Image 1 (cartoon, helix red, strand yellow):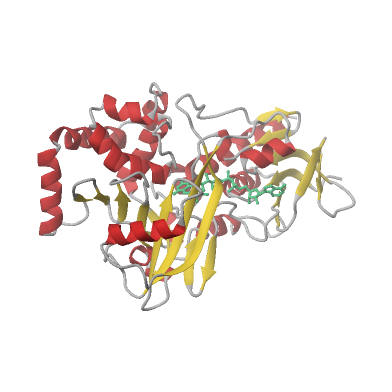
Image 2: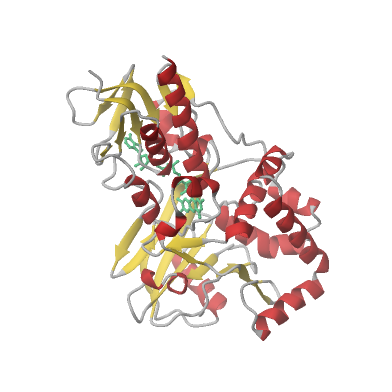
Amino acid sequence: MDDADVIVVGAGLAGLAAAITLQTAGLQVLLLEQADEVGGRVRTDEVDGFLLDRGFQVLLPAYPELQRLLDPAALDLRAFSRGVLVQGRDERWDLSTAYRDKATVASLARFAGKRPLDALAVGAFSVRDAVVDAARLRGATPRETGLELSRWHVSQRTTEEIFQPFLAGVFLDPDLTTSSKMFHLLWRCFVRGGAAVPANGMRALPHALADLLADDALRLSTTVESIESGAVRTTGSASPLKARAVLVATDGTDASGLLPSVSAPDWRGVTTWYFAAPDAPLHRPTLLLDGADGSLMNTVVMSEVAGTYAPPGRALIAASVPNTTFNTDVARTLLSRLYQTSTSDWELLKEYRIPRALPRMTANHLLTTPAKVAPGRYVCGDHRDTSSIQGALFSGRRVATAIAQDLTRH
Ligand SMILES: Cc1cc2nc3c(=O)[nH]c(=O)nc-3n(C[C@H](O)[C@H](O)[C@H](O)COP(=O)(O)OP(=O)(O)OC[C@H]3O[C@@H](n4cnc5c(N)ncnc54)[C@H](O)[C@@H]3O)c2cc1C
């Protein structure tokens, strides 16, 4: 007798979304996860009363899949302010659209006065991306994002000072070679709903999804070693677990080890540092970008976004760069310049160097790939659709729907 209709390998966002979809279709699911907690790349550590997401990351409440699976309000989201602060080569821009104070309005007006074509271009594609049907953005001719920005007449200088550090944070892509389709789809979500984190850390998302599963559907600390016809072998278990279908929902590199026909993706990496400070160096939940030199650092006072991320009377600062070899002392010096304050009394709580953060998405990236790779074997995950929370959730649901159709047909 089978242990389940479908075994899902990996309880990241894709595996969780798949398991929920299969369960809703009336199938019996077994979700196997090698770690001691769900979430995959979306997890949160607690250190001395601080909440540290494993690498700075944000949730876009306008992600369609999020809204499909959950009520985002259940995550108790804390919003970043709209817009960004940018340390440019010669001046600092406050491009926050959330504030109406004199200094911010003056900075926005100065930017529009000095770079009117850039202001118009960004305004034009922001409105276009927000209002057109998403299918039109998906169907557009893809090109590298850098070329796309110049096609919209964004100047080289604004691209380098603002978009390069911003997208180095979002796609971990310092060269702006990511598909323009991805850029516009993501920009659409930023414009429509901004960015946020759950009060209890990014882990709240996978935890809320896991809560939707039947009690006996999830097995943690269970590593799948190999996949056979209609069965999987797990570490330390004498007999295989049997199922009508097996869905591999690991990251792309692990999937290529379990399924020979799947190729491992090229990865983009990131380093995030978390510092504790006695006082917030900026009293705003706003992302600050380094557009002045090649570091492409982005930083934010997390405790200003969500007070729950730090114990009372202390501030939590996150800073990230799109590579995994950046020197920590240099990062501290850069932060001192960006926040215009000394960082000598900041305590380094933890640094995360993550080489396998996001699968690279080139201009000719396929937005979707086949669900089935061999009889009874399926694959999903961000590497099969798009490299994001939205992409992982969508991939899980898409492939689970295909499995449910196959199993109910036979
Ligand atoms: C630092 C960082 C920042 C990010 N920032 C953002 C952001 O701001 N916005 C955004 O939209 N996206 C962001 N992303 C991307 C997003 O987190 C990922 O695209 C998404 O979480 C991938 O989910 P997944 O389920 O496809 O894979 P994973 O999260 O990698 O899940 C795979 C799971 O499979 C398990 N597994 C692997 N092998 C086995 C095995 N043999 N047996 C059992 N289990 C196994 C793993 O333990 C893991 O839990 C970020 C990613 C990182 C790392």
